[in-house]
Image (cartoon, rainbow, N blue to C red; front, side):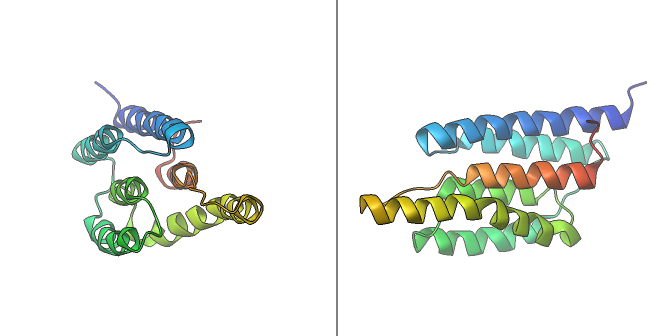
Length: 149
């Protein structure tokens, strides 16, 4: 008999691997692949179907609507919105504020560096915010899902 805890840990580690790949592509190309987002979505649904994960579509839907507005105002990239939206599905509603606050604090140093860089170079700078999003999910999943380390 296969242990559900082991399956949960494997799925969470697979999500982490996808997030690490998205960090790489976000740093190098400033893009987050739709394929990675879909794979993460499938892993989240699979984890829920196996009885160990969470499925919270309300926070995800609210963020998607707000995120689309931020995207059209050119405040954030579409890949970042998709990644946060799919990750929010797996986070319980009471932990969503923690997840979003950690994203903010992890992204703050990048924003400060971008502001300083922009003041010297006088051109626009894009932020690889996938790093902050992934880091926040790593911390959230360690505290919530009790992943084996």
